[in-house]
Length: 256
Image 1 (cartoon, rainbow, N blue to C red):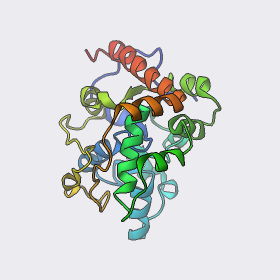
Image 2: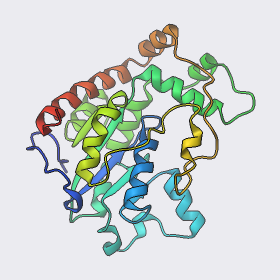
Image 3: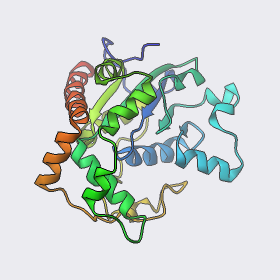
């Protein structure tokens, strides 16, 4: 199925319940900011559902059924489905609405530093950055999209992403997220929850998203930027694609 996006006319502001918005959230790309805001204003497991550890563990702790097991009338209330487990066919849960998939891609060196700080904050004696990084596979964002979209190779990934309603880079969330939120029909002012060392600003999120403050163990350096961008060259290409695609969609939707 094609997703609303490429070749479409500008959407009407505040389209709300005519559409199902689906955030294909890759780790450390800004999803905590978006998910916390949507849960607050749409209601967790009311009009917003999260498919991933946060949502699944919360439902399990409550003894609530999986989203896939909800009755049709409950699924029909959903306005947004988000999470690491959103894949290319999740919109079929709500067949009566037009799906609008959206996602963010992060510059690979920034992603690596963020991911390292996140994991290093959860252990008492973390490895150094390069030891940790060299043990990871390259191009994790391309690999994630291959899995979630059911395709192989960056060419097929970008071709499928061209059908998304919105694709953009994480560094432009502050610029583009207000427009996305307006389309969904929720307040456009949001709290940035993406800063290492800023765990205190998660205290008001319900259900709780994480129980540890992310410490900035590693800062970005020129060496990290150069070496990571070189090794994760496909992710770097994907990030450049997201920048260009965002600019195209902003023009198309009148977000300028």
